[in-house]
Length: 369
Image (cartoon, rainbow, N blue to C red; front, top):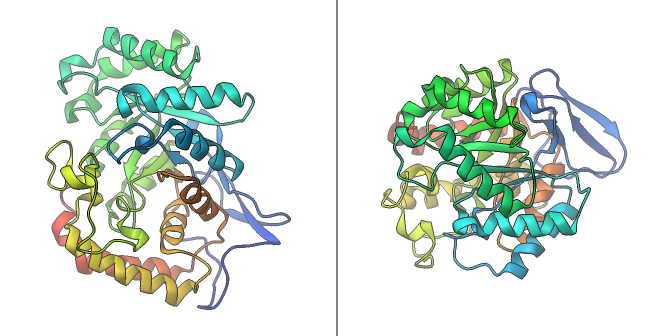
């Protein structure tokens, strides 16, 4: 990280009397303030919304990560809010709308929570460029507004559409129309590749880019984050734990449920391979995760888990607005949120991550996404 405080290997990173307050990552550095520990915050690009450094991804509350009951899902949302999370990310296809509906129920029960809800659209039909038109946008939008119980959606993102969609003027004109009609307050895109992100950044209405960024997927650092910061476009970092690999809990013999994408999409059988374990070979990922865990222990001691260190490293990258790990239970939600309280990691930590990436993954994946 560029703006960091030098820390020794034995320093404790969870601050109690000192915390950082994030300026707009496009315009200002981290500042030190005395006071109560709190979740760090940033401004989400041109939306002007202040959101938590650690948000909550809610794919798992809908489907594709095994079963999560409605009661458990609501408990995860509440635990996240109590821990300072003010950004929920969902999509209209997560559980065929179940994730949106659960978030809508939670928001109605917690008015004035200050939470920004971002959803995604574009995968309810065959992934063809000709399907990304205003009439379909309105149909999808109507459904999401009903699921979430709102008249205006805070942020709508195109959900990893075909590559040609990112360069279509007509698509952005249609999104501008949704804003003009009061259906959405702002829009962004979710992308699979850095090239798609850079194309979207050419269009001035785009408020945010959602992209995979983690210690096993470093390519966005090269060009996407600097370009987004220059354009005042927010960065929403997804898959920050490489589908759990960076937690350090998996072995080569770990098994996943039949309806878990980590079981059925390892080679891109259902959707883009990069969404599962960040596209890295699973066995190599397990080995590299062991090295990452050792790095965390050596650098940060036992007070920070590998998952927390991985999350903190992502949100501390210049230009990142929020990082959106998922959580299937209250304990995971609380632990993830705590990563938003960590002081800046030492520059040596980023250097070690780069060396790990170069040794295990750069040759295999850097050119793909």
